[in-house]
Structures are given as structure tokens and as C-alpha cells.
Length: 275
Image (tube, rainbow, N blue to C red; front, top):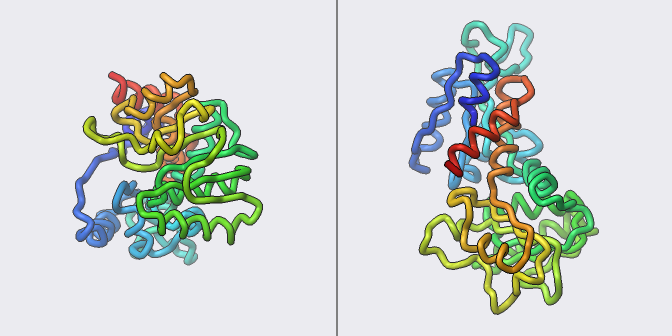
């Protein structure tokens, strides 16, 4: 999606994928900075690790405690830090500026892909790790009415619950499964990436027919076992392609300073994911 966007914007840039061992992440970020990369994206498990490896954190990264986008910046002759795109020649001083574009992508995807307004909604969130914590905090900031957190390690769900109670006291947050109907079930675990994965939902604890909509952050495979079950239960359902699209569009805008060609990016993504 990024290369399709860069071509549309007429930029002589290229977006490439690199497999980096977590033990080498700091060196990889420093290397990208030394080679005057405009920026990088980070995926699991690098998002949490990178918080301590960038030179400065945007408020979005501070709130979520994770970095998925880095913009490299240079110091101009007036001492002002500016994106590297603004420099004709590499500046003598550069820094890594960490952002999180995942959080804002979540409510946008829910609204556009499911027609669901987070404010006032009752939500069951599966997973309290990096992606789950980001989703939980963002949904709380959007003003969900009730939020249930389920995680394999209960203490992690409790920690996120306590954080939400401190930051957003108006949200009723609990750990465990709800007893009644909800507006949204959101999967933020990695269960579903492999065909052999069990469902992230304990069907004995909660029946899908009690969920109005189901959103799975996984986008490949395009239809996970959870989404198949959700459709069979009559729920509105969507995968994580929309979230991937909107976090990518925001990252592109941070790097280029131009509006992202979202329709072009969506078509490129759909072609890649759906064939």
C-alpha cells in the first residue's frame, strides 16, 4: 500500500520490509538513521521495545506505551527539528521521533467497517498485550460505557484495567467475560494467524450471538475462525484490514507531509490480502 501511495504522490521513495531480530532492534534503528531513512514502521514485537530506543516520543506513543512509526528528523540552521524530507542534503544532526498511529486507526476502522460508534458502547476486548493495551486505552478515551478485558495472563488484564480507571474514571472496566449482550467483541490477540490456532474466545464463557459486531485485528487470513463463527451467529464482522490501512495512511502523512491517497492504498491492500 505504501509503494502504491508513493507512486501516486510522485515521490522517488521506496518502502521495504526487513526482518530484524529483537536483539538487534536498537542497531537497526541507529542504522536506518545513519543511512538517512525518512522513517520506519515497526511491528510485533518491536513496538514496545522501541519506546526506549528513540530520541523523542510523540504524545501518541507516550499514551499508548508503544511505537509503531518512527520519523527521522534533522536540526536546521536555526536549531529547529524538521522531517528529513525538508532537507536537500543530509543534516549533520538527526534524531528518531517515535509515534503511534495504531490507536487512532481503531475507532476509524470500527466506524467505517462496522458502522459502530465507540462512544457509549459495551465492548469485550480479547488480549491485553501491546495491541490490546493500545486498543483498550483508545476505546476508553473514546468514551465506551463498559469494557471487559480478557487475557491469558489475568494480571496483565488487571494492570490495564487499573490504568484505565486512573486515566478514564468514567469508564466501567472489568476483567473477565460479560454476563449480558455487548455491542462489540474485539480480538487483539494473535490467535487466528495460523489455521491450527484455537479460537481466542471461550465459547463456554460467552456466546457470539450476544455480540452485535465482531472485529478481528488479524487481516491475514482475511477470514479467521472467529470471523466465520461471528458471521454464522449473525454478527456484523470485519477483519483488521481497515485498521492496517488507517495506521499506514497516518504514518505516510507523518513522513511525506502530504494527505495519504487512502483509496489507492485500500485497493493495493485488498489486492494483496484478498487476491
